[in-house]
Image (tube, rainbow, N blue to C red):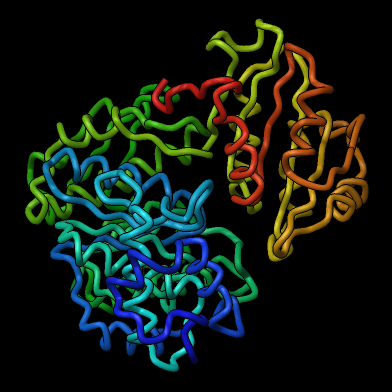
Length: 469
């Protein structure tokens, strides 16, 4: 497959610094495979070989349905506090593609990404790569060039055939298991878990933070002779209250100083149980690997205090005073599947509001949007739906799904179900109709939340509270 017009015969460095912009590259890589998803490792492995790629000294792979981004952020913060140069790769992004590839918490700059893309373009020859495969190779090249000491790779989908599984990891962390991407991963938790467990490497280390895991995870770990720490079986989380927890384990693979870590506080808002499970999985991962990384309990505490993550139960207020200042509270969350919607609903149910809860929702067509609406309708009084471009449901389709659900004593039919042509239009309609004591909850696709965050982070909008507030 030929490179873009005007790019032939250009050397990689000249190309990266003088020709195509990052936006041009992103448009180009979107077109280089006839399918958006092509789960296999052969093509990307060949290109990685052509690039003479080398992995980082220490690699953590993170897979799961929900909680991956939170775990990556906490792991990176603790490793960085220990003095390591840390690269992290996540997807999708909220505001800018650069967010996917970070070094010590800072997004990679355009020049580094463009240089990596041109090297990949030359190395792939006629091999087709998907958008995600291009991005994964780009992250690995940037980490290699920057000589990161610890690398955290988040799977995009599944695990066994996910592009990040190209790299052998030292330890794999599996978060929650739910029904998502069923057309590719299977229609049951057991099948999906088996795909996620595909990131476990022979004779390596593994952690499962899911408190009720399908049996395929432990079976895969046993088959591959992994040292596995399973939530509830090999470590326990004791909660003093909704926000404070202690982590305990007697597993023989752990050093004595890591068998009890007390009084930890999850750094993000959200329903308590998933937050505890995510943090406990991170502690288990760091405890198992402390000899390789040098991470201490104090590094974990310091990292948690510094940890921030956009779009996860992120609360905006006008002057930090809640709902008493003439404007509604605003909450944004990338709840884009039924399990994450249930977590968001739990968070909202436990968070008091004096007025009504207004929901602003948009979803891609490959998501179980009707199930997401069903999970949220018990906590939302009025709905505003948005049409998403690039593979999204129309607002009218989402509204029809809500109407078909009907009403009940626990979840009465909403008073308003309005449709708008875009996320920003739906948000503006919701805020205009909301009263001072109401709250507006924007959730759904990353595209949905990203569009609103871009608006909220303009200077005239309310400042976001710290994720640790």
